[in-house]
Each structure stands twice: as structure tokens, then as C-alpha cells.
Length: 473
Image 1 (cartoon, helix red, strand yellow):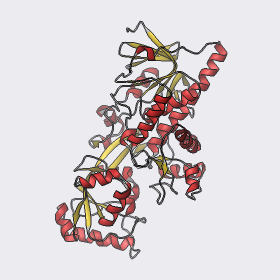
Image 2 (tube, helix red, strand yellow; image 1 turned 180 degrees about the vertical axis):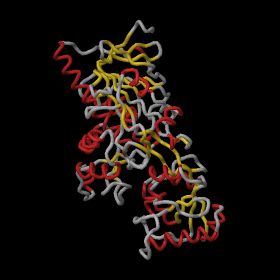
Image 3 (cartoon, helix red, strand yellow; image 1 turned 135 degrees about the vertical axis):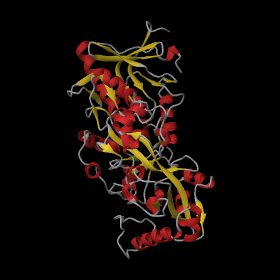
Image 4 (spheres, helix red, strand yellow; image 1 turned 45 degrees about the vertical axis):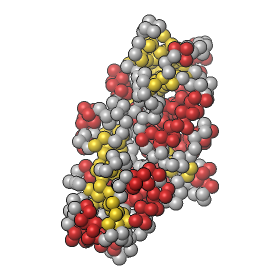
């Protein structure tokens, strides 16, 4: 097939991570012919690398656990954590749709359960919903099953190289030698954390940190948006993670901190409040000298391993080195014994309420740490950028002047997020997937409404798709 040939669909989704798969299902539910392009040889993107945790307020799963919550309370928590930013209007939109999003996913056959028993950093109550094994890959698998059940064509290893515009409207994209026309194009092609020049420009503090996200987060949406005069928002914001395991290369679960773990530097001393969260503390680590170790005890290790298979596997790989007492722990991590002993004593006093924590930490999970201790060597990493194309509350891409670009929508890493303007401290647990899947749901519905309006005004008939006949799979 050459560029002179073309395929027609109603909606073309570029990207097959959580955002793109959800957007495709949303548009399909509205009765539209949908196709998905993905430049990687497998679907998932950063969603597959996450824990699959989606924050939502006022859900039936919350109520079944006796948790009363509201979209308003959720939005208040987000603003308390981030302050004002370029996507203020999206905060209310995403929190309002969050409970509906969980219902939508459940209707598609996505297995989610309520993460009860504790609340994550920044959230005033428990509101995360996640796959039973806490694996984003499981979330992607369930979404893919739904896409297949709906007979939505998915072309893997077929990345879009440019968008097609006609008379000011986006009418499709070029993928290889194929011209795919559509009445709506949804950009779900991730952020720019794997593009060193873009990262150095917009998130310089993270430019030298390890990268733990998808290698396909190369800023395609920003490049295409710039050519169209699209606006951008919150480009300085990113999601960091303070727990990249030195031994396994995997991310150590922050549940260890929420249960009472602490983080120390090479001197055996703490240097901040770990309950800033894995993202905020990750940024703090980027400005501090390592090596770093997460210190917890055997009770916390066993408690977390019982509920999180990935952490149990990391323990089996030697990521949690055990020490019988403080002296042995100091030898294990190569820190001065006196400094580490003072750190453990100070943390114990704070956890028991005998003294105020010098860094202001108040939440100590299961309480003071007791021998035997465990240590995991960690490093800070950047996982995902949180800024992108400026969009309205319907996920329509906007120009710098604030006008919608007809036919173009964006979500997930391609769009501006809700984690503040700059740095990693505005990120709250689940912000990435709330933006990805929530905006995917919204983009699919907005595209359907806009296409209906356009066809009603112009008398256009729905496309008869030849995408599946093209055998792009």
C-alpha cells in the first residue's frame, strides 16, 4: 500500500497504553469505527510498568468498604498537593468522572479491587483501585481483551510519523506508507521522558536521573503539536520514583515507607520526610548525594510481600538484605555505625511519640522499626513526564490562543497533567493513570459527540472501514 491509497475510520487512536485502549473502547461504545496504532511491538506503554492503581472518589467499591468520599474532596486533596497550575480546570473534570471510570472499566471486564487499609500520600482517604496483583500489566491485559472482544483493529509496530491536516482540521495520520483518514484523531502516545533534549529543556533536575519508563516516550505529541501551533501546559512537571532497586532494576514499592520504612544516605542519616511520597522524595534524592538505602524491618517485609507479588519476587532476588541488629545493618550498607544508630533511635522516638521528627514526619505505619532489620539499596528515577499539549475539559487539543484544533484530542502523557507546573512534588499516587484512563474515556466520548455534530451539520455518512482488511496487525 502506498500513501496514495488510504484507509478510513471514524476515530484513529495513536498509542496503545492505558489511555489509548480506554479511548478506543469509549469511542467504540458510542458506535464509532475505531482503529489503534502503536509503534512498539506490544501494547502497554507506561501503564504496563505501573502498579495499575487508579484513584477514584465515590465508587461502589469504596462504599462496600465503608469509605465515604466525594469528587469534591478528591479535587481539594489534589489542589492542596499541587497548588494552582495550567490544568486547573481538568482537576474537577477528572475527579468528577473518576467513579464512572471505574464502572466503565468494570463493564469492560477489567479486574479491579479497592486498596483498603491505608491511604496513599496526599489522599485524605483510601481511594486507589488496582488489579489484584498490583500490576499495571494485568490492567493492560484486561483492556486488550476488551479491545479484541469489540473487534477493534490494533496495529503493533506501526507508529504514526505525522498527522494529516486539511483546511485547518486534522483528518488522519501517516503510518509507514499507509495513509489513514479519520474524522477524529486521539493522541495517546505518551510523554517525553525518553527524549533527552526535551527532558533537559523542560525538566532539567531530572535530566541526569535514571529513566524507568517506556523507551517509546519520545515526545511525538509535542513535536506534532508544535507544527500545528498547539499550546502546552505543565511541561516542567514529572513523576519521579525514589525506589529504583540497585539490585533488580525494578521499582521498590512505596508501601514499605507507608508501613514505616525510612531512607538514609551514605552517612546513615535521613535527609527528608519520606512521606512526601515516592515522587516528591525522588526529586529530593536527585539533589542529594547517594548511595541511598531504604531501611525497614522483617515485619514490614513480610507484611508487604504477602500482598504484593512483585515485592515478594524482589525479596527472592535478594533486594531485601537482612541484618540482625543495628551494628550488622551498618556493616551491610557500608554506613558509619554511630550515625545509623542515631538515625534509628531518632526515628523510633518519633514513631513512638517520644519526640518530634526533625523532618516533620507524622505517619509511621506499623510503628517503630525493630530488629531484625532489612535494607534495600535504591536510587532516584524519572518515570513519566506530567506535562503536554494544552487541552480543554473535553480533551480537545487547543492552540496557544485557546482555540480547539478540529479533529484532534489528547490524553495521558500526550496532554498536560494535573501534577503541578514544575518538579515531582505535585504528583500524587495514581495521578498518571487517572489522567491516562480518565482522559481516554473523555476523549472517546468527546470525539463521538463532535463527529455526530459535524455529520448532522454536513450530512456526512459514517465511514466504512477498510482498516482490518489492510492486515496491519
